[in-house]
Image (cartoon, rainbow, N blue to C red; front, side):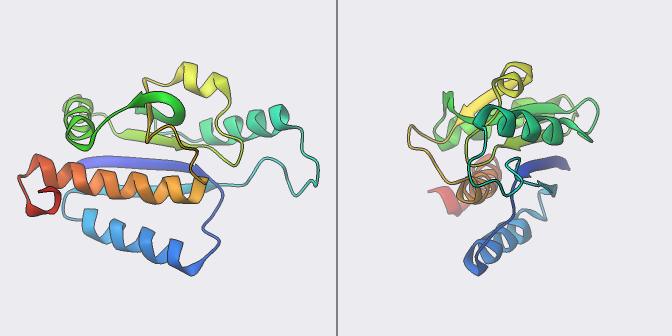
Length: 157
């Protein structure tokens, strides 16, 4: 069974977000073990945060406690944009190593460049900037869709 770790900045702020996350976690349960670790936002409530310091603080928090030997995938608008079947093939290839796959989802101001550099892969869900809580939901939906594609299920057709 695949093992996905999602390390994300912030927590869902609205009930619909929590509901969507729960729904996709339940749908993924037969195919993969998924855990989500939420990291506090790096601005620490500052009204005028220093964006670089914020990203650096979040990068340190996202890096701490990562599963050793994981295949690290950073979600970033500068990454490779994959259609769903291509993403499914990537998931299959990454999982063949037997390593858990860790996805990094940045905060309001994206990922620190160091995390993108250190990642094994950087992917994008398009050129639009997604709110980080929505990016997490899109990731979960795409993981579920990838599993459906790999199994020839109706969900993607």
